[in-house]
Image (cartoon, rainbow, N blue to C red; front, side):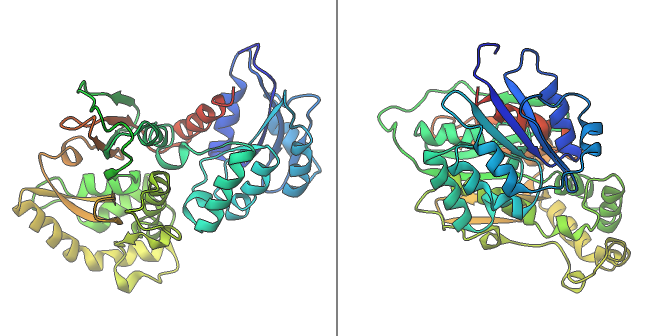
Amino acid sequence: MASTPKIYVAIVGVGLVGSEFINQLLSIPSSPFHLVSLTSTTRTIFNHSHPISSAWKSDLSASADRPDLHKLTQQLSALVSPTQKVALIDNTSSEDVAALYPTWLSTGISVITPNKKAFSSDVALYDQIVAASRTGGRFLNEATVGAGLPVIGTLKDLVTTGDKRSFGVKMRARSCSLFVPVVATSGGDSHAQQVIKIEGVFSGTMSYIFNEFSTGKADGPAFSSVVKIAREKGYTEPHPADDLNGFDVARKLTILSRIIASPSLPKLQSFASVETASLIPPALENIPTGDEFIARLPEFDAHFAEMRAAASAAGQVLRFVGVVDVVNGRVRAGLEKYPTTHPFATSLGGSDNIIMFHTERYGARPLIVQGAGAGAAVTAMGVLGDLLKLT
């Protein structure tokens, strides 16, 4: 890596993921990366002559400069040259930051991010990003779907190599494995672009809730108690409705469906176009606080218990899944039933995630990716992995 051209790096967002990313970046030996800028919600620093070091926290705290992304754009674009690359790392979840991606890309600045907003919101912004990247910088967003897992990269490889595909990716916490079944590849139809189906448990929060709530037995803990414990463990957002509405899964499905870009799929205007079956009881949709939501959720335990009992009677479990169904032209997220022998029932535990890739080439035995789908360390790893692709 010592002979690699210089790559200037600017980071916006230094919270949990941002801080972990900085630590991972600075630990790379003989690194071609020069950390020249940090921006938090209240302060910023920029110095391309003396790269930022492990004392970055104190340096940022001592700065009197306030965030100014338009000024940062000018500073970074001045560094772009045929022999120097510039990468901006957006570790925020801000729509305002995401709106600047086309501007950055058009000036030759590459954008790397776990921020789902730019790739799952208004399709006009997404189209602008893609167009700007064709002549400017690169955008890399592996961490928007599976944190450090190779979900987007795997999908892109399948699309560009012409496999006909449906999907199975399995993500389990604390590990990351890639299972590649040995099957014969198809011949003669090497340029087929048809994706059949993507199906999986994309949310660690939903995974934990239903792994605990629905095990195949007719009884078990109350739904409200499982959600309460999940919140106490930090698996949910402070307001659990922000998880139970299914929007996080809908955003990830939007990102994947836009990569597939099949004419059989609807062109989603945003993640709101995904058929999403919220788990929020209608009477609780406008509850303003998480505490009040948790206090009232027991009123609906009987409803969820009935669904669990019905699934158990049929030898099934309940799982909140996301599906990109190309054949039928649907993208949907919601509660589904699966046999107790299905991988979605047998391979999940805790907050594990699982998704599946069935393709013509990986026909009877699907390609399976397994590992943690959330968390600061693995998300930062996914971002860093994308950055390394610029070398």
